Image 1 (cartoon, rainbow, N blue to C red):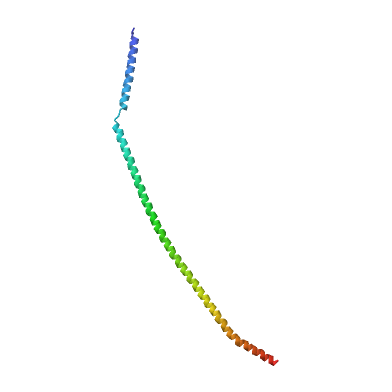
Image 2: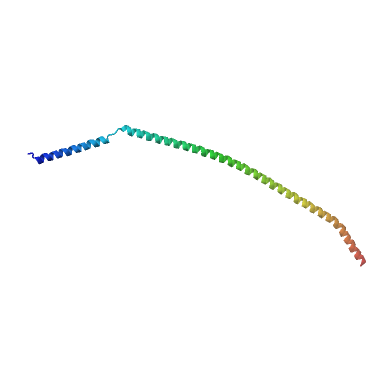
Length: 143
């Protein structure tokens, strides 16, 4: 048997059910979206990522070229430094050899001079010895 309270309860229950269904429909509609927007965004992001990757590749390529050029210049500079150093060392060795040669020549001149002085003094010794012997002989005769 239906009385007014039962009718009101059924009406409230029906309205509640209708509100829930309306809420579900609104939620469903709000969650519906066009996938093309997502795919456009995804394509833009992929394009941006690819552009960044290509820029990084180009930056590394340029960096490698610069590094290679710097290494080449360093090798050339090193070779030039080595040549200059070798030239300086050759000049230094030549100067040392020349100095040694001059010192040997000077020592030889000094030895020749010493030999000449000794020969000269030997020439003077003979007459001096003879004179000394004569003096002694005269002294010996006087005695």
